[in-house]
Length: 175
Image (cartoon, rainbow, N blue to C red; front, side):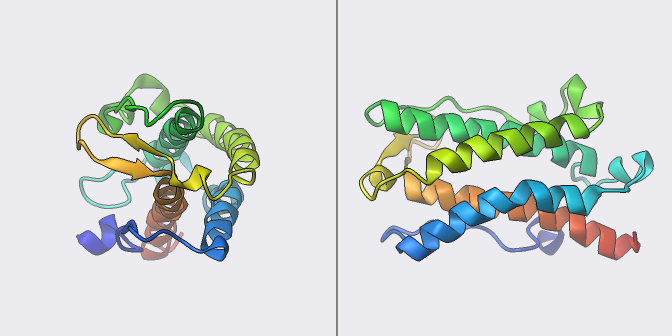
């Protein structure tokens, strides 16, 4: 079950930080995600889009709507860290967000949003300095501080995590 839920494993943040090459890789992976998503879902039928990637998991359609919802929250967290001193972020219930009415709509809406969001986000990420990468926020539920470089790594992982859920489902189903 964990292999289906976390097909590329879980992300582990590093206390010691990342090299410039690793940061560049995170940004490149965030930049590449929308096109990889498009390639992964092009030609899927509505029945395929409404198939859960695992028993008890979200459907492909829900995953496609979840990605920009989650990444919008991440983008806003980056902006808060750049414009406020150690902000306390606003948490959200991603499970309930995945059940709102628009998550049954054509996922092309969310893919379009993901493309625009990632273009703007990458533009911002490429301007960050070493000092910026050390900025952090406080998560109100976990009471943990999250550094910007770890958040960047988390979201490089997050996109690939959901992409692999979709591509693994396609492989298992022979689509």
